[in-house]
Amino acid sequence: MNAPSNMVKVAVVGGEGIGPEVTAQSHRILNWFAAKRGVPMTLREAEYGLVPYLATGKVLPDTTVEAMDEADAILWGATGGPETKEVPAAARKVGSLLSLRSKYDLYANLRPIAASQALVNSAPLKAEVLKGVDFVIIRELTSGIYFGEPRGIERLPDGQRRGFNTEQYTTNQIRRVARAAFELARTRRNKVCSVDKANVLETSVLWREEVIALHNEEFPDVELSHLYVDNAAMQIVREPRQFDVMVTGNIFGDILSDCAAMASGSLGMLPSASLGPVDRFGRRKALYEPVHGSAPDIAGRGIANPLGSILSVAMMLRMTMNQPEEADMLERAVDMALSAGARTADIAEPGAKKLSTVEMGDAVLNALEKVAGNKREHL
Ligand code: IPM
Ligand code: MG
Image (tube, rainbow, N blue to C red; front, top):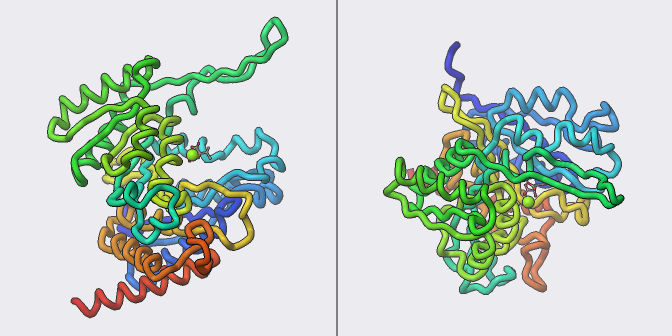
């Protein structure tokens, strides 16, 4: 079989809630990089959620499965919200976000946290706490209590009900995500903090032992520390700048990444990448999505912040498309737009003008034109 061409296939799936609105803006950004910068890509839009369910009986219709199966990168919007009530639970389970993570084995979920200087005044944490914050949470995404068996809700002999789930990790599952963390740290400030609950849970005892063993075997040059998850939550709001790369299991990573969002100003700003194993061509399937979720309270009003999704495109440019300079350019354009005062409602200081989702997309595209123009002049 021939090695694949450098044409990157992207499936664009807006999904539900604010997903389609924010994804429409990051889709424009991708189009811009294809048309104006010649980044080789094919884009295929596909539907997910209540809309295709009503038309086809499936939240994830066959055409979407096909688009996602053949894609190198999936740009995902959001899932969930009131729509979940209109689709029977069983139909929703087939093709849920969790089943997609599992299907494509997207085990390494990268959630970068960077505090934009332009946002420190509207952020819930103090400016001095936010200064210089720049770290990445790597969350294990395909195991742990989210997927462990047995699970369920049962009826006890005395008539009560009992819900139960299983937290579990194997050596390989721990090692591969820890390896991703050590490798990433080597490209940054060379520090990994592993988060667990080894004072209580066996899975965490194993987690810590395996992280330490891997560190000794392959990454002795990287600085390694450990925190219990409760302490980690406190440290993230107390002094987030101490962290470079934080690696943790599925549920701890879910909780800590929302907490860490406050160290970036707003949950609406946070991008993420979920990476699968490297194939024999050196490629890895990846799903890029904003961390914020479907935000049903503001869905359909055109006021959601598209920057989490747009910054997810920057991650895609860097990690799947191998275009680090274009990724930098996009991140600079977002900074420029913010520095010039562009604000959606979630990041607006009191009294500041609030842009719509589309206007924020416009602001980033305008800034991109400027950054690209400057770049040409400097050549
Ligand atoms: C996230 C979300 C998901 C998760 C939900 C939507 C299932 O909170 O990606 O952080 O818990 O993983
Ligand atoms: Mg979450």
